[in-house]
Amino acid sequence: MSKAPLGARLGAATLPRLAGRSIDGAPIEWPHYPRRFDRRICHLGIGRFHRAHQARVLHTLLQQGDAEGWGLCAIGLRGQDRPTLDALRAQDGLYSLTETDGASRRIRVIGSIMQCIDASSDASEAIATIADATTRIVSLTITEAGYCLDANGRLDLRHADIAHDLADAASPRSAPGLLVRALELRRRIGGHGLTLMSCDNLIDNGKRLRTALVDLARARDPALAQWIDAHCRFPCSMVDRITPGADPERERALCEELGVHDAAPVLCENWLQWVVEDDFADGRPAFERAGVVLCDDVPAHERLKVGLLNGGHSAIAHIGLLRGHRGVHEAMADPLIAGWLATYLHCVAETLDAPPGIDVDDYCASLTRRFGNAALDDTLLRLAEDSSAKFRQTLLPPLRQRIARGMSVDVLARAVALWLHYLARLPADGGDYRDVAAAALVPLARAAEGSSESWAFVRTALALTEHEAAVVCAAVDGHLHVLTQSGVAALATP
Image (cartoon, rainbow, N blue to C red):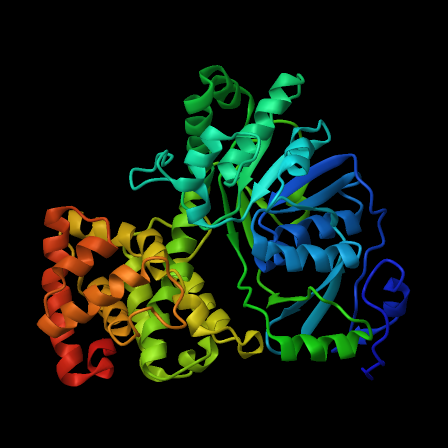
């Protein structure tokens, strides 16, 4: 396709410029539906993943004529959400989504976001909007930390944001605080219960969200907690689509091809999976008509995805960086890393019961292909971010199962040793490595590597019992010795 000179910003007025245009032989898709709603889905966490996933699904339904009257309201909770919200507002909520498998691309202009609210400094508009009768569903992609839960899975009432929200409910800082305040108002005006749908990479995510909200409500008003528990629904869901971070150079090239300036483009793979529990309080779009799977056993799908996809990402991140790679696809082209990934996936798969109709070997093979998608140019540093939280989700469950069954923990202990080895080489402040626990873990990793004794690191990084930690540390200590004596290649070899 020939490049057109850049003119105005993407928006409702410039959509006609895309008519008849194509990229890689596929027409550019743009909204052909009325962009107005009387049934609202509010979404907390207006990041790239949501715009590649849930917003894309609703767009597909609207385009098909299967979701008339539904629309998304994007709510930003953090100051860093403002640039995206400002870009979307300036573009009438429109943005381009490029889906690629490496061989070809498909570009859609997504129109399902029809309202934007910045709640980072003033939450009053967001509270009123969620309380309004037109809002039927609130969905979230805020990551595990945003739920403010403690190590036991209950709301952490000592968390700074939760303590603030208990003292000043009208100006909440946390997602639970915002939602409980909105539900309080909704109850007061006689509204129906809401569906609150977590779309984060957490096993039993709906149950965790229910716990956070009911615990906070109970601390303020037990009657409100009872109303939330009785009238609101918290379906579990599993979401899957690899969506790398922003790349300004790639985005400029896309704008040249589009012929309009898009300040909020998203690139993702062409794989999309969404499994959700069919438990909604006040209606829902016909998600199944866009390929969403509605089932009763979402946690089985989530365990498979979190253990293998998310776990696989974490498993290759540190060894890939230690081997000098930058991109995920570059690491997958390294035979040593590809072999290590296969070993890791097999070890985790031995602890999983696959959902009906899913062949685990085929699923693992699909992950290898997806990780190798060079068109995404995903980075290992992104995969390594927040490893302390990710390993508790991905590595801890299979680790505990293997210990309980008397199975070897050698492979999983190797993943811990590689993580420790990577951390020990970082500067004291963690450098470019983003993890809230980095300041605590980097010194412990250095000490462990110097002594080949990982006890303090393992007990701090992983929530293990003393017996479990003893089993794991015995293996990790041996692997640290191999790393310091023979290097990464010796440890990664099956």
